[in-house]
Image 1 (spheres, rainbow, N blue to C red):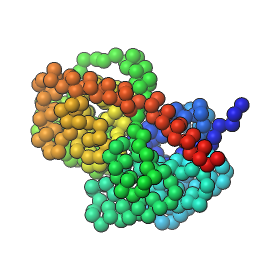
Image 2: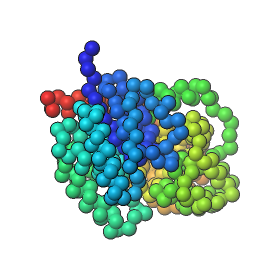
Image 3: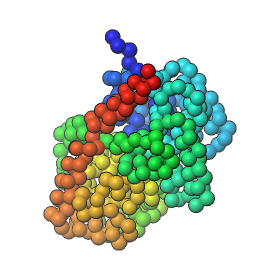
Image 4: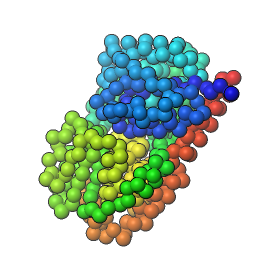
Length: 362
């Protein structure tokens, strides 16, 4: 039998969308590569996550991965990655998220192994950070981009940002596993429910819970549900807004599928998988005007992009009072996911890119 190439994934942000992305891609690639995943644990890392991965995938914890910049832990994490590299002897390395991208590029800077990096939303786009801090993040990314590495962007907007830093950039869009969603929907047919606006994700500054709460208060006749939890849960106090806390993926998908509108007022994004799932389930997407969101949603065509609070309210009101006027948008959104944002397409593009890199190395 032909020996499979060894592919090492590295991520510190092992929760939320990055977790779902790595889970999907690792499982899709397991038949063609010997996949290793080095990860750091976060509070939102799902319980029992090991059972979600294909048994052929090797999971390796990185003890000193931390989310914030802590020089001592970061140096120790770099040493852990160097040790993992020596033990695994990968043919390819792919780093996911800004923290793993920074430490990994430094740790593997002088290796001959083809190196890839996916930001999943650049840190210098974080609007909750001050201007100076964002400039520091940009300078760090610019400096690290001098290290030979291919940046693989998960959306058109992220690709445009990457080209500000390096010419070694490619775009392979985020995707969702349509087979899994179809199987889930067959087993859980739609049930009657009141008109519902749903948000999915960690309740943090990035997801802009304060704006979601204001929108809910302006629409007391509408049911709002936030699936998730986080440090800013106290900002969600509208009487018509329910917070579920963290739930299993099946329950989150069930709540999303039964919603009428996905509300995504994020301050910054990469390309949210929840957005793609909602589009495929024909849930009208009402989103903020940021990278990732406006790369996929085109206002008035397959959803609504909202620059201001009033735009969110008007879009939700239209969906509630005149559902026939938004049906074509929802159908268009589903078709676009089927054609461009499905896991089979993503896996084929990654496999071709990795094989191309291996051929070049040879």
